[in-house]
Structures are given as C-alpha cells and as structure tokens.
Image (cartoon, rainbow, N blue to C red):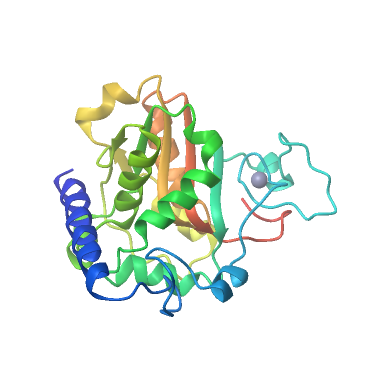
Length: 259
Ligand SMILES: [Zn+2]
C-alpha cells in the first residue's frame, strides 16, 4: 500500500518538476523529441504513424474488428465468446507496436512523466463509456521491489490524472502485488496467465469498498490480458459487480485469436 502511495506522490512531484522545465526548454514531441507547439503534443508524423483504435470494436476486449465486418456496438469477437475474460470491457487508445513502443517504454522506465497528462486525456476519451458510471479508478500495482527500481508506478500516475479529468475517485493503492513475478517479456499467453494467477490482491482496508462497486483498472499496456485477468478475479472475488480495463496501448492481434 505504502509503495503505491509513494509512487503516486513521486509522480506528482516529478510532474511538477516537468512543468518547471517547460518554462526553460521548448516543448518536444512525446515520441520523437522534435520541437512542437505545446508540451504534451506529438509531431504530425508520429501522430500519423500511431495506430489509434477506433470503432468498430469488440465490446468485450476492445479489439478492432476488420472494417469488412459491420459490427453493432454490442458485438463480441469470437475469442471473447470462446473464452470470456474475467473483466467486463477493455479499451485502449492505440496499438502497442513499433511506433508506440518507444514512447511507452520511455514513460515506463525513463523517468519521463511529462506525457502523463496527454496520455490520460486520450485514455479518458477512449474509455469514456466505461468511466461514465465507474465508482472507483484503480491502478495495476507494481511489486515493491520493482517500484524501488523504477521509483514510480506509471499506472498509478495515469490513474491520478484520469481521476482529475473525470472527477471519479481514485484509489491508487487498492490493488497490491502479493508476490513478485518475473518479467513477462517473451512468455506466451499460457505462461503469463500462470505467472499472474493469484499475484494480485485487494489491500485489506479497501475490501469493504469493493463489494458492489464498478471498478476501472488502469494500466499502460495490455499484452496477453493476464494482468487484467488477475486484477479482475481479485476484485470480483470480493464482490465487485463490474471490472473494466483501460490502457494506453494494447497488443492488437487478428480478431479471431486475441483474448
Ligand atoms: Zn473480444
């Protein structure tokens, strides 16, 4: 719990320092570093390269349908029908690919939080329908050992900004990692689910708040969905009536294979 609070505070302090820097240095594109008009902007070229996820979408996982399918807003992709996720809906701003990856990795590991307000604005827009009637915004937690290495939890920083934009309550330390997991990079879906199973729990002081609540979980990237699944299971087990997932980016796979 304490580590999540500290990470959120650290994020706010860093953001303040970033604003001070804006006064001294010209604003630069969040991805390419080119000079742009205002802080938090992308250069026109990067903007064109990003693969923004737009309707028609699977109403469950938020994966884009091929345009040849005339999807109605409630349509669900075959993968979600075959293997329903533990969460209700997931939404993301853009695809996690070669164009978006450097920007996200810099945000995640590079002590570069100046993009957070813009990322949060885009996420609030992409997740408008799920944020509209959510009771709490929470963040995917980092294990304390990883938090010590990174010094902030990027998901908690995003959650804090989205809470400010929407006026919804943020409980950045509601979820906690009860054990450390190895880096998931390179693992397939099954291995990721195995690693994450039971790795996330609810902080005891918030157990009562979860019962009957509609909760939106914030993360930076959804890859296999294993982390989202672990969060959703922990929240649902304590009585959450709906768990939605909102991420900045997500891996986009062909619609018939992704969950
Ligand atoms: Zn789906």
